[in-house]
Image (cartoon, rainbow, N blue to C red; front, side, top):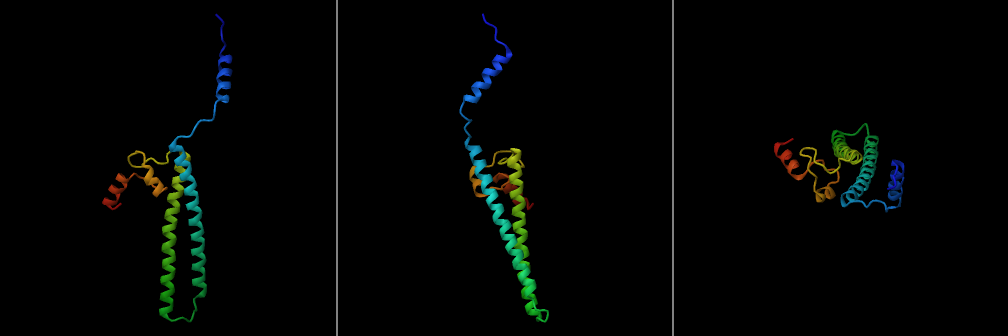
Length: 145
C-alpha cells in the first residue's frame, strides 16, 4: 500500500477546489446584494434631497427682507420649519440606511434586532432598512416606544 503525505492530500484538495465552479449564491445572498444596492441608491437620493432642502433654506433666509412685516416673517418661518422637518425625517432615514449597510457588512442584515428571527423577504423589499420583524415592530408601536 502506498503512503500519501499530508502535503499531497492538501495539494490535491487545493487543486480540486480551484478547478470547481465558483460557489452559487443562495437566494438570501442574492437578496442581500440587491438590498445593499437599493440602500446605496436610497442613501444617494436622500443626500441629494437634503442638499436641495438646504439650498432652499438658504434661499428663504437670504430672500427675507429685513423690513418685512410680521406676516411675511411668520410665513417664512413656517417654510423654514417645514424644511427642517423634512430634513430631520430624511436624516432619520439616512441613519437607518447606514445602520442597515453596516449590518450587511457584519453579516447581520435581515435579522430582527429584538428576537433575532429572520425578517421576511417581503418586509425587507418594502423597507430595506427594517431592523425588526413585523411582530416585534407591532409590539413596539403598541407600547408607544
